[in-house]
Amino acid sequence: MSIAYIIALVILGVALIALIAIGLTTFKKMKPTFNNIKETQSTVNDHIEHFTLEADAVQTKVNQVKGRVEDLQKVATIKMQRFDELSTHASSLSDSLTYLKDHSSDYSKGIAKNTTDELKTDGPMVAKTFTRAFKRTFQKQKARYTNE
Image (cartoon, rainbow, N blue to C red; front, side, top):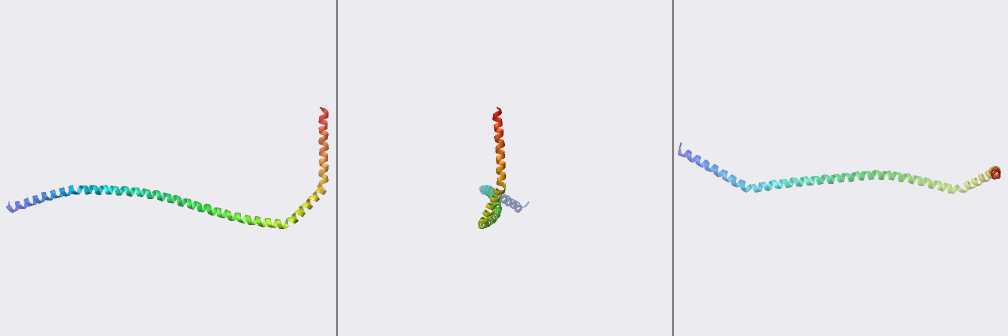
C-alpha cells in the first residue's frame, strides 16, 4: 500500500471522527432546542384541544339558543293568530252589542208583552195549582198531627 493511500485513509478517518464529534456536539447543543420544540408542540396541541372543546361547547349553546328562538317564534306566531281571532271575536261582540243596544227597546217591549200575556193565560192556572197544593199540604199536616 502506498503512502498516499494510507494518508488518504488517515485523513478520511480523522474527517470521519471530526464529523462524528461535530455531530455529537451539535446534537448536545440542539437537544434543549428539540426538547423545547416538543414541549411547545405539546402545549400547542393542548391549547388546540382546549379551544376546540370550548368552541364545541359554545356551538352547542348557540344551537340551543337557536332552538329556543325557533320555539319562541312558533309560539309567537300561534299567539298572534290567537290574538287575531280574539280581535275578530271582540269586533263581532262589539257589533252584536251595538245591534242589541239599538234594538233593546224593541226586545224589552216584546219581553214585557210576552210576560203579561203569559201572566194573563198561565197566571190563574199557576195560582189555582198553588192553592190546591197548599190545601193538600195543609190537610196532610193536619191529619198527621191530629193522629198522634
